[in-house]
Image (cartoon, rainbow, N blue to C red):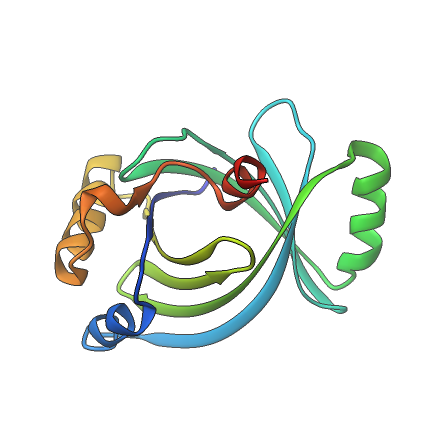
Amino acid sequence: MPANIEIKARISNIEVIRRKVEKLDIKETGEIFHEDTFFKTDIGRLKLRIFSQEKGELIYYLRNDSAGPKRSDYKLYKTDNPIALKEILETSLGIRGVVKKNRSLYIVGNTRIHLDKVENLGTFLELEVVLSNEQNENEGISIANEFLKKLGIDKKDLVDKAYIDLLETST
């Protein structure tokens, strides 16, 4: 199963962080709006990420809730009919909740840097260090920590929960 090291932090000024990110050796960038529908599961998290009527990804992942870098094991399925898939999953599993966000994506090396504006939650930085077959968890954690230093993210701003969990506890 593919894995990455993830870390999330609440940020107060997204433009200050954006300027720091844009000084890095960026391979790719993009602006994305997507809606993540989370389904009820007994183990892990299952979400359908809808980009458009014709493009989506079903993502299942296992991850501990802890502040700081943490391993996430995931499986991904791309679909060209996310609306029909959502109806099937909603009928069979039930919907846990929905997260809507505008995301600025930057890829630096094997790390995806996300600057997220999450509806009803605020602004966040999310790092995903995609582990190659040759890399271990400690190497990924080291890379994530280096990015935190470069971007000036304070440990007190780290978030230990997924956006869906934060939304559930804020209501």
